[in-house]
Length: 257
Image 1: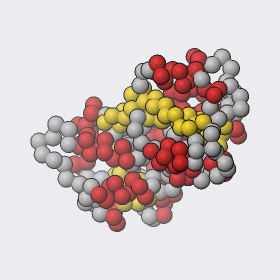
Image 2: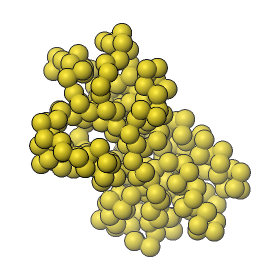
Image 3: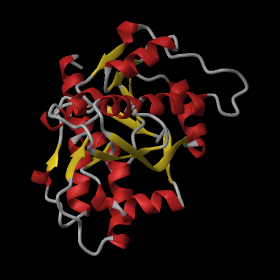
Image 4: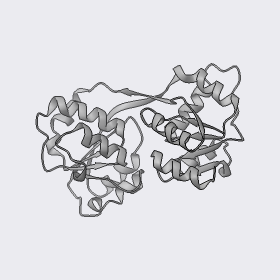
């Protein structure tokens, strides 16, 4: 049995170790590279005025990591009276690990890892009219958060700190793995899936066909629908409860592999 891991390190190696303990052979190639965006004057101003926001919402571990670096340079002491919100436990842990004054118990974290889960948090069910939110994210995406909070009377400021791009340096590796045949393919996000498709067809003499034998493990129904729209059979898509390794292993175990 062959399992393709497309996520980044260190999560990829951790997942490979757990799969090995289950007797599953895995191979790894990152589908996406993360490129920090240089701070514009506007972005720097948002960070310098961090204390003016009521909420800071951080949508990923990558965003948390880059944000922590900027805060370390710009804020000798973390401003108080801010509600910190993180999508996913990995994001919350990265914030608390990198920002000494921000213990994990001070970070609101939903059970799920999508925008809907975040918006269902109790702090977003109260009156928010006139509140200010800094939405720390990658370039593009998470439009539902901004739209929903804006409709509730919140002033939402987006702070994109990185962009995702296909890891074209891994294209040949991905193509070789794919042609050899795979049983399972792990996908962490919609962008991750589109990046993998870009790698498979990068400089290829002919368009790579979707592997009809592989099962795809994805973190949400939204990502599942993206795969299906690209010709992958619905029965071949397994939806886990989020993108964490724990959720993936749970889904895999339920398939009695």
